[in-house]
Image 1 (cartoon, rainbow, N blue to C red):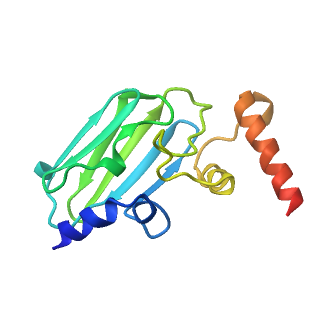
Image 2 (cartoon, helix red, strand yellow):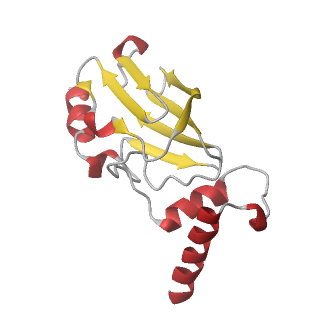
Image 3 (cartoon, helix red, strand yellow):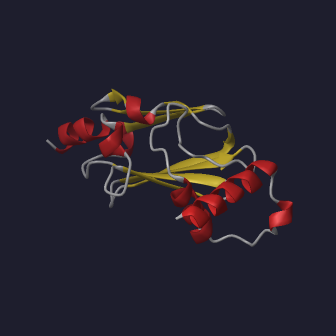
Amino acid sequence: RARRAWGCAVGDAKTCFGANGIVQWTQTTTTVEMIIALPRETTIKDIKIELTDSHFKLWTSWTGCVETLSGALSRRVKSSESTWTFERHSGELHVILAKDNDDAVFQSIFERGQGAKSHVEILSDFVHADEPYEDSDDLSIECKTLLEELKLRHASV
């Protein structure tokens, strides 16, 4: 039953991602971390992950390929430096993707936009990341542009 319910919930991108969704994700300047809540009875043998520099695919023994959590990534990653772990006691799958470009900002995990975050949510990720402070003069043009856009939006509110 839990697996069937999980399969239904993960099949809809709106219930899959978000505050109460199956998938939570955050980012720092160097990584993107996804935490995927799996049914409690899941074992490591039930999970298969395929990861390249531009694609991520999750398979489970009870659903096959999980389409909502598979596909072209919105940005390139370093697959050789990325990793995943499964915590059996909590049923959580932790996926850490090493960014190919430290200045890259993921607005969503996948190219199709699944799990897209607002500018405020992205800024919150970076504010809460436990990283050394980088001078704003050293940021990439993309990051500077995003920050300027956030400042303008904040000023208009």
